[in-house]
Image (tube, rainbow, N blue to C red; front, side, top):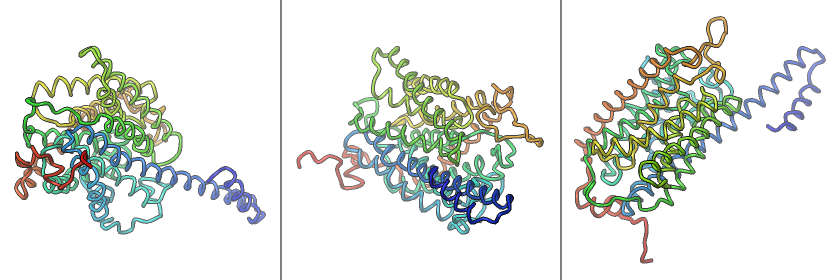
Length: 457
């Protein structure tokens, strides 16, 4: 609602209200609350769209450009199909397992088939927006998280196996982890009765660590692509990846600033931290690459910005702009090291560096949140007297780093073990790996009967 519309509605309410001053003040308060609800809901609906844009077209283009041309459609299809598959699972049972009350590890079945999820707010999570909006916003996270894993098994997984694996992974890993961190009574929820207060504003543990470690397990289980480290496997279109990275940067404002669940100052703070983290990380990665190889590459720049976005995600609603610059720069250098040095040393074929960027960047960001989180940015955690509690090391609460490390460890173990179980079941039911002939032909033709580029037309 605009300022003029608010003034008009307020004036009409006051003109029609009884003469009592108290009643007029109550009417004015109701009009202000209505305006706040409308503004918050508008921002959250926009944030829903921004986060969905991160998967398709953002991640689809980013990953699609990084594979060989014979696999571009199959790789993009991984992102697209999850916009459908994860939505159905979320509606049937996922939202309930994540956000209805249950135990410390997983929610119950109160919201199964979205029963009772309507336009009235759920004050446990967001008092000024419809629960239906909150549900939709959280759905977008459930869509992109397993899509991130697809970067590890690109160019060699059967499409049927990918569907089985992802369905099981959402049920076994994502929904429980989302409940533990964000659900009421979840083990790691710092604000709603958790036993171990772990700060994760927008998904460092829930999204990036679980997907990153799951990606590493998938890459090792599937074994390297045919010809890996023998024949060239360069990206077929850095132009597509460049566009995808820019869309990811753009959409990430909804991802992080939207996690404020309202259009107030906290959303602004998270928005700025997100941008600063991405910018500093792009510079950090490029400087490390320039120093080591002599040339700053476009691929390095866009990989660096994504690494910064990953690392700032858990911290975005807890840190000031200068801390965001520090976190981003460290993430750019660290993730470059993980991708260029560590992966080559151990020889695992994480096709598109899902672990090196998301697993490593998410872990780093979660730990640094314990260092730089401050109640000057987010004062939602209070003692019984209403005084804001210290959050991170900069506030004098060094113990928060331990809490962050526990959250990281839980995410790593759940992601690794859960991913292995899901891979094994998918392998036993339909076989994971494409045949050698299918891989040589390319998954576009062998799995989908199509080609990304018809150069003879």
